[in-house]
Image (cartoon, rainbow, N blue to C red; front, side, top):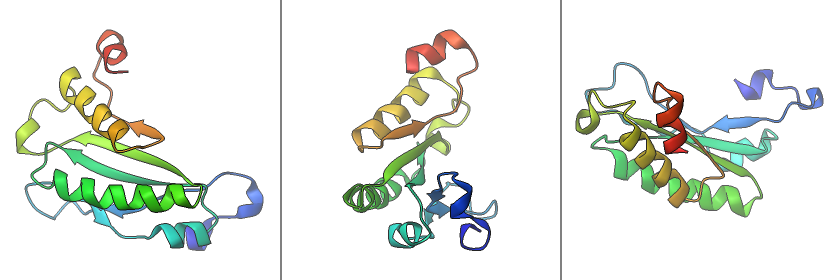
Length: 131
């Protein structure tokens, strides 16, 4: 979409999300890389984003892919955003639990993301604890 609709002259910084999935892919969430850091840079992006499903059986695979993206993006001077969403059987019913959300935030930080996006836990007190 960015290749077709992004207008550099607008002055709005572009962040390109590099992975994705469909709603039909199976029980355990897996979001794999669909765009490269190189392509994002060619489009004029200042940064890239990537989702990791914390608690999914595929978590490790996404973490490995993210770490390669993080290295390349930072080498190019781009910012890196990690979307850390609790999903999958291991966290079913606990997607907004403060300990689970905090664990995702910690993983994102340890993977060297510049920004980490996590779901809201449902109340200010527990979310402050996460942060």
